[in-house]
Length: 309
Image (cartoon, rainbow, N blue to C red; front, side):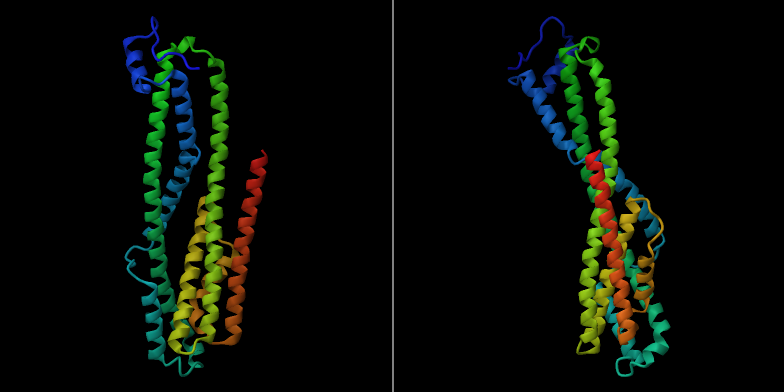
C-alpha cells in the first residue's frame, strides 16, 4: 500500500537526512504517516495545551491566596485541631457547664477561626503541589507532542517541496477548524475542572453532615469535639473546592450559601451544644450542598449544549 522509503531525484541532502530521522528504514511512508497520526491523536486526546492553561491560571490564583497566609504554619493536622479546641473547652469548663458556651462563644469562635485558617492554608499548599506535579507532566507531554509534529513535518518535507505539496489549499481550512476545536476544548477543560471541584465539594459536605450528626450524640466531650472538628475540617475542604470551581470559571463572587457556611463554622463548636443552633447549622450546610448541586447541574447543561454544537 505504501510507497518506497526512498525518493530519488528530488530530495536534497537535508531532506534525505530529515527523512531518515522521521521514520525507520524498513517503514513505508504510509505506515509512518499513520503512526504519526495515531500518536499525535493520542497525545492531543486529553487536550494538554488547554488543560495546562487552566492549571497555570489556577496556580497563579492559588499562589496569590497562599501569599495572604504568609507566616501561617502548614504542619497543623486535624488531630491537633481537635485537641486544641478540646483543651480550650476543658479550661473554660464548657463540658460540665454548657450554659457558659453562650457567654464564651465569641472567644471560642476567634480561636476556632485561627485554627481553621491554619487548615485552609495547609489544604491550599497541598493543592498547589498537586497542580505543580500535573503541570510538569503536561509540559513533558507537550514536548513529546512538539517532537511528533516536527518529525511529521520533516517527513512531509522529504517527500515534497513546500510549493509542490498536494492539498495545500486544504491546510488553511484545517488550521481554522483546529483553532475552533482548541477554543471549544479550552471551554470544555474549564467546565470539566469546575465540575470535578463541585462534585468533590458535594462528597465532602455529605461526609461532614455525617460527622456533624456524631457530634450531637457523642458520649463524651472529647467524642463530640472530635466529631465536630472532623465536620469542620471537611467543610473547610469543601469550601476550598467550591472556590476552586469559581477560580477556573473566573467567578469571583461567592454564593450566599458559601458565605453562610463560613460564618457558621466560626461558631460550630458552641452551636452543636444547643439543639436550636445545631439544627440551624445543619440547614446551612444542606443549603450549601444544594448550591453545589445546582452549580454542577448548570455545568452539565452547558456541556450538553456544547456537545450538540
